[in-house]
Image (cartoon, rainbow, N blue to C red; front, side):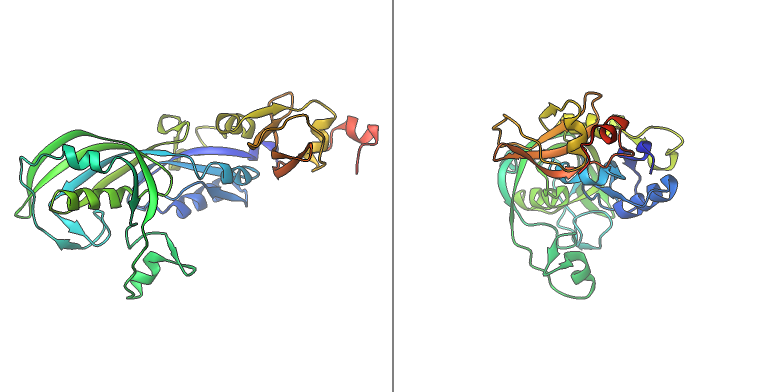
Length: 308
């Protein structure tokens, strides 16, 4: 595999595709077998999907836990069984046009326990919750600790939908990984004494990566390029530059000594800024959580007798 096929691709996922089907599109377009993503988007949701290609899949482990931001449209006054517009309507209590949502929004900001939507990718005894629901099971998911860093309302509009008085909100939220915006919409409706669900959802960032950097799924590989692993790793991890010939040793999994005493994981880069490994420090040596394979052994390594 050529070195140009190792990297991270920032994709703008369209509505109607699962995250895994988007991965399959990239796999076919790139001709690379190992392709994965760093965090599922619902089929109806759009926006930023972080995709690892080749050795980039090994770096995804360090990207999945990054915080995320979304721009969402929430409809108050109607509930669905999926907490989004793809579900079946289950309640239509309606919502007064002049409802004051400020206190409820504040209540749902910060550290809290959130029950995920029943139709979600959360695993229950090894099977996805949505699979169990589709098989007729009643799924009771436990609450999990999440953080809503910010929750702001950009627009509030009253409307009537199929004879039901509703209030439509445009909101922007920043949340910890594992937070369901659909569940946030449901809980907002409940806090207001009505119901709520998401009608549109767009992911705008994952950690330091922005939707503005992403390429449309159907335009790649015609436009956009893979982001180098060293560049990506340096945005999410502390870095340490390793000089030759230690760089060759790291790339081949040899544990080299270090004076560092950090407890954090480090991205080890060569002098050109290429990612060699992600490592922790143990007993005065680097211990590797991942190592990026080299496309070829540098000539100096073979000549210096440092193999093995």
